[in-house]
Length: 159
Image 1 (cartoon, rainbow, N blue to C red):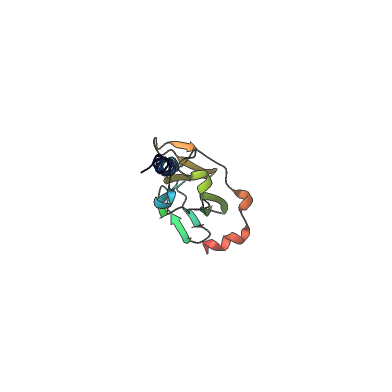
Image 2 (cartoon, rainbow, N blue to C red):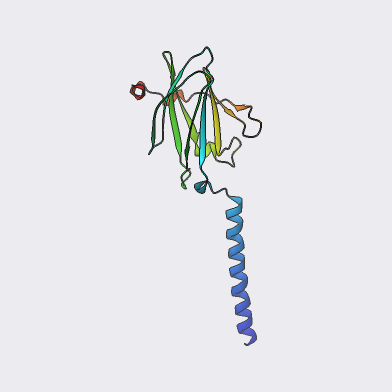
């Protein structure tokens, strides 16, 4: 093999190795949530022995109406979409009060974000939902209800 052929072969090997390493770095650096199930856990932390009613759904999946006794919990599992746009929204109610909250938003809850999770645990309080820290199991943050998304048209979800 002549020196030009060796040089071309070496160049091709170097390029292939470089591309392979680059692809490997991207796979390692970016969490692949498509292959990981995510679990959302909802706890009734309303107090006053109040039962919690709620109805959760994504764009494609309706999880139906649920009823939790005081202190009870309920969970569901799913695989986030490859496109990164998975959202599960819930309408929560007790007595004559109703609130809307996106219990899982892939842009907020992906593992690499500040409050990321593959097991997302939420305590539902009267003044809003609070997410538990995955490590300490203590309340991490309490975002406000998504009240701007609430519509009285959603109330039949409880019937």
